[in-house]
Amino acid sequence: MPKSSHQKLKLIYLMKILLERTDEAHSITMHEIVDALAAYGISAERKSLYNDIENLRIYGLDIIGTQKDRTYSYYIGSRPFELAELKLLVDSVQASKFITEKKSNELIKKIEGLTSRYEASQLHRQVFVSGRVKTMNESIYYNVDRIHMAIAENSKVVFQYFQWNVDKKMELRHEGAFYEVSLWSLSWDNGNYYLIAYDSREGIIKHFRVDKMLNIESNGKVREGKQAFRLFDMAAYAKKMFGMYGGKEVWVSIECDNSFAGIMIDRFGKDVSMIRLDDKSFVVNVEVAVSRQFIAWIIGLGDGVTLVGPDQVVEMMNEEIDRLINQYK
Image (cartoon, rainbow, N blue to C red; front, side, top):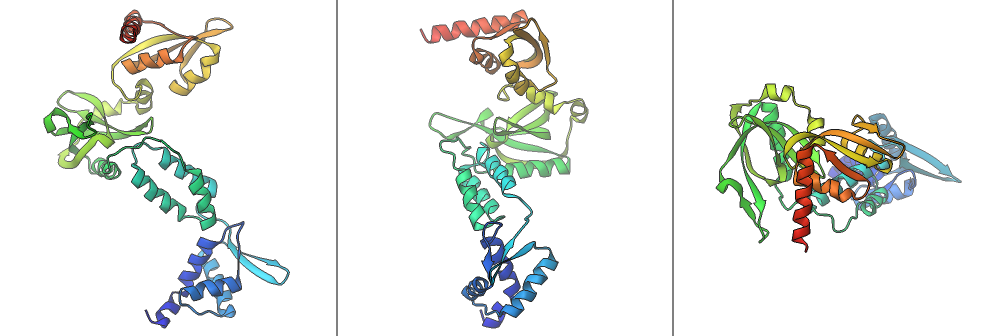
């Protein structure tokens, strides 16, 4: 590229230098700016740089000038995202099971580009989490996009659904047959994305893990189930499910020591019914989708938590305990 073409990009490279190399803890002197521009093949005089910096300020860049003795330096003050906000974004990406490790690294790299190289290094240390299980399905990132597009187009979708076998290979369910559903919402549960959809053939609302969906396509048919979703409470649905495993929805009663109040509120929300029994205990009345996962959750809480009703669910609990005893004799 001719030198004159480089010169035309001087303002852009100056902005790049300031954004990448400065923050509130790291400033850059005019001499260092001249050297940095020279590395890009751009010559610059101090007088013209003063005008360029002022033009970038007019453009909206928050360039702060400071003076120490006879040395004047500059740094970027406020940015669209504060460092603490970027850490939250990065942690969310890293914690998300539905985003593959490869895609997580790509997204984190892009987020790091929103701050200086110095603060980006803090983000890198912030997100190192060893042994966290991530999905192996690279298409998840694009599945979510296709789902949103289908919802916007008011269209049904068709897709294949798979499970992992013991050889760690994808195994299509229903012998590879395509599912057809009217999708209405996405739900996030335990680090996974779930599609909430209406199945016209069965006339019920179902959920599917998005990272286990393949070959998602809009088929142009108008979505059905609008009335069912008008009465559907997504937040209540998520509270009832344990690990998004389905089951018959039943009102249950759980007696707890007072020390378990926080756990019950964390799981069911602050609006859950909690009635004091005495100074040391209370009872929770809540509607849940009764499944083996719900039973296991109760068992896992240990002493201080007892499922007391209804009788058929208590019987399920006893059967599960007997099964575990026989399994581990």
